[in-house]
Image (tube, rainbow, N blue to C red; front, side, top):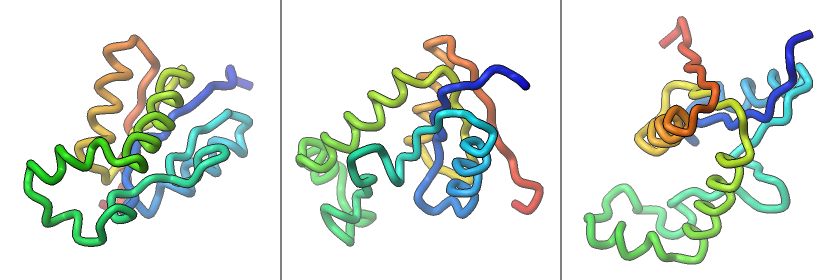
Length: 119
């Protein structure tokens, strides 16, 4: 058996494959951070702050980066990013997940990108 890892799965709420990837990696014995269901917390989504968040202008977005839920969500994810030794980017995903993978590369962490044949 290969070495077990601490894995951060970087993806998107809209990615239908993300839950399957988390479960498959856990079944193989890896410890996996799931941003949708982080330990002792609920996963953060901008829609918790405002269901119409996609229509925000830049000033509103910048202001709400300091919202308590946004700060908690960032801290949970960033703690997990530091904890992980391996990152898996599951497509499709957006800017945040790509930035997370870029950070991991800069930290010298093992990285992989999961591409789907169906997409």
